Image (cartoon, rainbow over all chains, first blue to last red; front, side, top):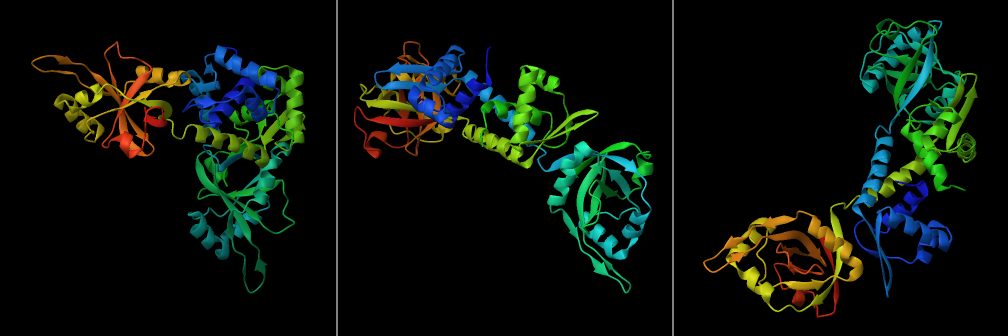
Length: 221
Length: 221
């Protein structure tokens, strides 16, 4: 079958007029206006759809009547299923990052009671005291920026006698099926091309990772 | 925004590669093959999508990386919602018919116990003894033919001492919100441009119909 995307566009326009469910009266002029094309183009496309058995067309003294056939409906249904698939796991994204060794700061922060209690309460797990550091390659930066824009799960800041600890934004995630969370300090000087992942287990050992390895993180937005 | 349906086609192709959820590596050559267009066309379309802010594109020494932006996702989502709407009442069709007076045959058949009991059991209502006759205009014949192809609800035939009564096919329907059923005898000489509707009430009176009036019947397939 010679089906162009342009034909699909017209078929969809007719479907939006309920032509899958009833016979609709439409002049080629009216269709032309709807699809923003010339009268000739609209008439030709209707003819093509008819030739392909995608619509059933009747001309009477009262005008032109069109209905979408089962074959036409199946074609539209395939599109529908494609879109459904596209939006199936709508709330998740996948970011690739390169493992690198931090200076142990992560371990220090995760161990602080002020954060730890909130991780347990808001993320649902007791984190291993340490973080997996990931550096985001240039081509993945779109999603890293998205994380900056997204709200995430807010981990409140707190104060001890000595100093103040800032807010942290967390996103639940999975790495190779293991649950965890991306944690991003909200302090402004935090470098934007990296993020850290916490998890109930020591990810580096559990996944056998070494510096320079790439991992894919499935993030729940 | 200057958005053509062709651009949408490419955007959807990228989405089918999960580019709404992750950064995908794709050469213009590979895209050209996917959409069945020339290399130049594919490259130009990517450029257009980028210019419209529908994708985010990064070129590195490793190749071309693409991800669909929030704006691009919104556009695809609108399409998704359109298709969802198209298939919302998937199982129903609407047929228009012209009211005409029969010769009273309908009343006779509906009153027969052999049919009446089955109507009650299989359609869920006790029919008024009589039928509303509808003649299908030429341009609506597509759906009339569909009824012939569809299974419907089978009302078995039966025999009395004198004669045999044949099978009838029924389809639940609504006319102006009133429940009823289209009944079509399976005997072969039954004229294909008409059908009869039964209902718990006398439709002609209830809806104030007279010969020559047109009514829309919502049929559940």
